[in-house]
Structures are given as structure tokens and as C-alpha cells.
Length: 124
Image (cartoon, rainbow, N blue to C red):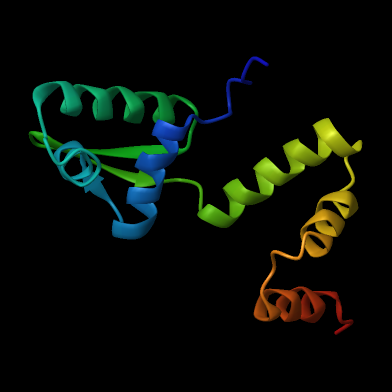
């Protein structure tokens, strides 16, 4: 199944995770975190991933001197919401109820997670 242009790859997601956890970073900092070998090829890979993410408006670049700093433009929660909506659209006709029902019925939720879901469903 072909990816839509706004969808991100696992490698791009790794870069985003770094930016979410650490905050704004240079290419070198991201490379050191993702690829401990830190070779020139690894640096070029991260640079290309950042270019793609920037093209998709998932990261922004701050130009400064010789080093550019990158920051995430989308938070983890927003990306989760986008991906869940896409799954709901493609598998469930747009409804999130079957996805939630499956999660609850799978028995893989902890008691704490079940309580969090119940709390979200309570009227305010």
C-alpha cells in the first residue's frame, strides 16, 4: 500500500522522537543519539530525514552560523491522533469506536489504562 506524502517512515519517526525527548537539536546531536557509530553516512542519513520532515512541515529549521537547529512542529499527541484517524478511516469507515473496543477487549490494557479510559468517558 503506497504511503501518502504526509505519512512518516519509521526512520523519520526516530528523528521526531529524539526532538520530542531532547528538544531542539543540531544534525550532529541527532546523529549521535540515533547512530552511535556516528559516521559520515549516518550524518547524511539524518540530514536527508530532516529535509524530508521539513518538507512535510513536521520539523522547522533555525538557521544560525554554521549549525542549523531543528525542532519538532508536531507534538507526539497530534501525530498519534493523525495516525489513529487514518487507521479509523481506512479500516473502520472513520469510526474510532471499533479501535477502542478492540483495545479494551484485547485484555492487554493495565488496570490503570482502563481507569484512564473510563475517566475520559465520564461527563464533566
